[in-house]
Image (cartoon, rainbow, N blue to C red):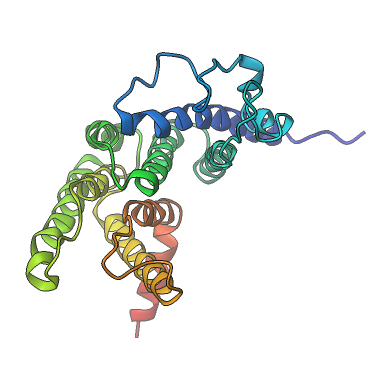
Length: 262
């Protein structure tokens, strides 16, 4: 009988752990915009306010066996809940596969989860809570100084460049385009990304975020799903750019430099 490689058990355990953390992230996504505690009270149905019992709070599986409805009131449960749980679980597996078990993966997992929360809150409410980004900046610097390959100097430069770049864009936008540009939440988000990843990946984050954001906005305008004067949240695009930079920065940098080589 063939044996299962030990790594499989590690990845399964990491995925389950990530999905469990994803369940908590759903609480953060729901409560942080309302300035509510993410610890107390325990999870409740948003519709009927009945307490969710532990066996109905199993990541992903509960959604499936309840067929996407609350057990008490039968109101639909948003598909976002299993989506966040699955995304966080798969993200953790990908991080461990890329960086191995250890402090580096733990730090990147914290950043990945923060980016997930930011993405869905910004999509729903067009805000990026300071309760995520402001503690994330010093945490990223500490991780860079201890367990990440970035180093504290590169991390501090990432904070200054990330926050300063978007601050400058926000400052010049009224003069160039006649309207406000980046919000304060975007500025602090990119500063947090810079703290974890360093100054060079911050530039890649902005490039990818701006490119994908512009392409998405133009497509929605052409399809008449978005008006020109409506606001398109930039946080999710910055989060996407940060994830790409976290996993692929060195490969993209090598490819880019090869294009410049004679």
